[in-house]
Image (cartoon, rainbow, N blue to C red):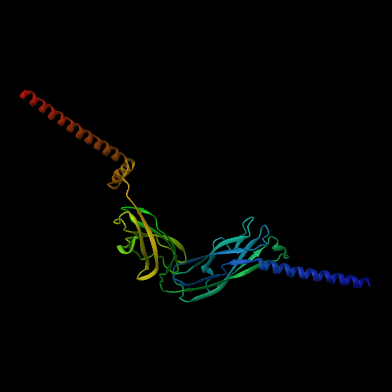
Length: 324
């Protein structure tokens, strides 16, 4: 009877332990996450590099845990690298880890599709004892090397600053590069209308300069300059068009505020004079010499004007005296 009770107790404990292990493993697995779970790019050129930020996280991170990455992309394992290495400690006090997975395409890469996985596993500090549970997941890799250059972007946002009379409008445009070469809009056009009369076209303008480019698969800001310096002070609305070569990418209705040009103060005039000196290549000592020379010339002119006025006055007085 006693033996049967002992056997029953042992079975109950074993069953409870088994259920606990299964439950713990399920809980640990459910708490694990990889974002994004895919590395996909179908338009990679030879000699380029594609970077993807990956976040690994779990709700049950023990102090001293690491993430181990295993790369298994047949034929191109040596193309794939992780910025922090293949075994990365979790940051102290955090339950997520960010890494950059890079794929560097060699110049002799074959034009075709490549598929595989990168496995990420969380290893607790006591993994060597053999009793700790590891959890993990896979990052699917699917890339294609192509000879075709693709120029493609989307506009995320834009900013229209207020300007003064005589100034050019510098539009800030945030774009995402969906292609495989560095890119910026090819041109911008503005059809400007009077805000009080939306039928009256005031001016049709086109960008004269576009600064910056954005790398493939990245977001960035470009600056487009439009020659609005001939527009008078006032409020306008404009039809903004953004082009990629001859293709219209986006069209927006924007408002433009132009304030009256203020008269330059003394300090600003001095700054402008300094800018002029810089443009003609004068150094600090040259500027000092030039300023002193100008001052001497101005004083000399004033002296001769005053002297001339005095002589005229004396002659006039002398003539008056002689007449008497």
